[in-house]
Length: 156
Image (cartoon, rainbow, N blue to C red; front, side, top):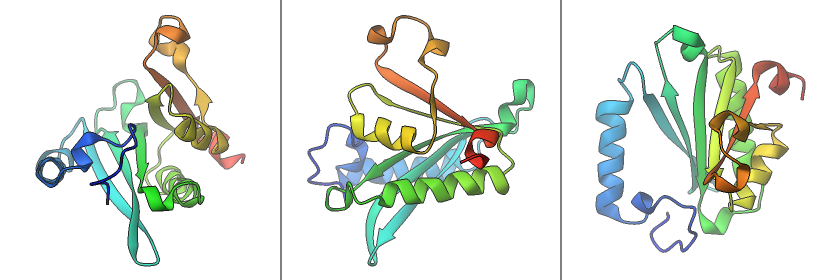
């Protein structure tokens, strides 16, 4: 799905079969069962073809500071399916599921500062910029950090 993708924002591990196998193995053996850093990935399809992947991670059973009520998401879209609204639709469904079924209070996401497509997608879903929580001036940060609360999502 990403083997020949030249997009700098697609995780390099997804571009080579060996590294992708290692990533999948890690997800199956560690992340799925981790008490503090659990996670799961889902592929979304278009006309039966893999169009992209949604990442859900930082799932925690740790109740300190409400950590069990927040998680982090990410996404990657295969080149032929970009700019069609598929990732936005898939992410919107994931958010609804996270708030309504998993009982999350906050969902976090981050992306490289120059990834304007991802930033636009997050902003279109009503995520708020939270760069200030990570210190430093904005120009010093490599990533942009975003969060959406249950109330903000429901108030769409």
